[in-house]
Length: 304
Image 1 (cartoon, rainbow, N blue to C red):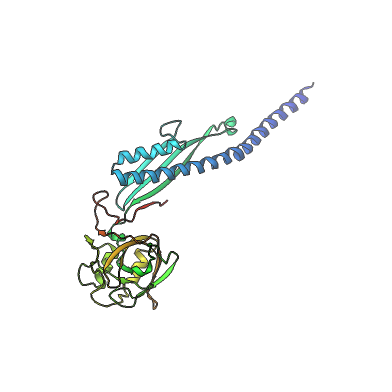
Image 2: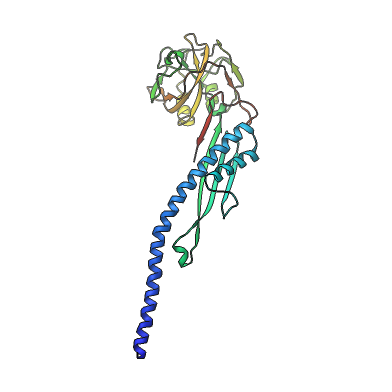
């Protein structure tokens, strides 16, 4: 074989090697990339479950160490063990707005093909946040009351889909689609005070007993409150008091606020999430786990 032929053979080998590396890279991106998406999905589920478990654990125990341990135990049971094989399960707990736990799961993806071209692993990160507890007075004690006639004999609410609830300027609700404002029987009701309850600028610390009158003491539509309900309460669930035909407290339910219209129709749009409960309603605010601040309405949900 002459020198020119040998040079051509060498060039072909180089081109083949480069092409092979490129083909391996393309195949690796397809196969290892798909495998990474599958791992990310599983890893996200592990983070979600760990955050929910830790938030619930902190609500019960009040112990950060125990909640962190719970998060890592749940993550490990789903295949992601903290400190093993490059896996890290980081847990952050905040109690400024109920109990919020954020769990970050970081793990390595072992590449099957890209390892041949010098990329044996890459990092996969997921994050989840969960909230637990009972809303406090700032956003938790809805300052309006509903009639017990909205519920069946077994406590089932009639309105479990989006519904418009108006008011007829009365001290108490006058029909199934009517509501009235309340300050839970703490004195003469006025728009400024209810507005402060909605915003959380004042705190009502009281237990409402069976048969206690919690309607208004002065008829009024309080039109200025609808905009604040729309601003501060839309998209959230709240414990709401239920009264009999005389405005006396008979129990509570959980109500989801969709929106409020401050215009001519003056209504709150929402629906009931829970059955009517015949139990007293404790209204208070305090630090997490220092007292029962959820007024019987248990909250455990993913927020991110």
